[in-house]
Image (cartoon, rainbow over all chains, first blue to last red; front, side):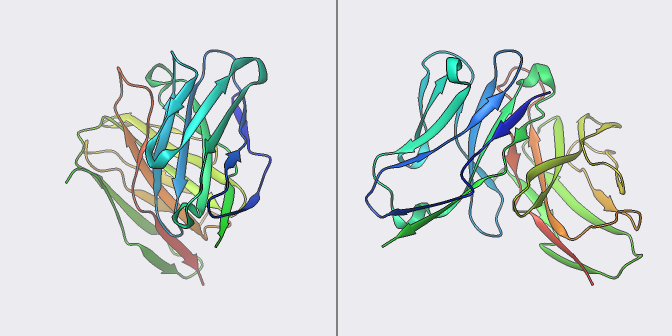
Length: 115
Length: 114
């Protein structure tokens, strides 16, 4: 069965500092990997996704993530955090449309940004 | 604008009552999903449907029911059999084939049992 681990429940960074959110997955085949962001009381918005090709993927709002098969990781990064980035971030793994598009989500990382 | 509409945004229920959460999409997606979100537990799949008149149980289907009579609609009923129904419920949709499995989400419905 597929699973996702986000080891950091809460992270606090200063505005302008760099950010890395960790994500480790367990999946038997080539995974489809996603990062979503959620503001309080809202739905989830897709930041970026990986399914093949270049292992460094660029997303919206200046985020990027790197797929490392050897480490089963898909960590999210941003060089300089803005106060508006404060939100909850979810990593997810799936099998693509061939697997019915069912995504398994991690438990999330709550990001706080200090001004 | 294309998207997913969930209603109501907030819902209060007395114990023993069934409630139905609405989810409508105009993205022309074949597949639709219901997830439940609790603090510290991420999102857990309740039910999903890949085609009209067909749906499958997810990981936590007990106490819930769904229907898929129209492509654009996938209502979720939280029954009195659900032991702990207070949660945030998210509806999502996706294309069925030829894509990467990306889900598009609605804004959610928060159910509180009094």
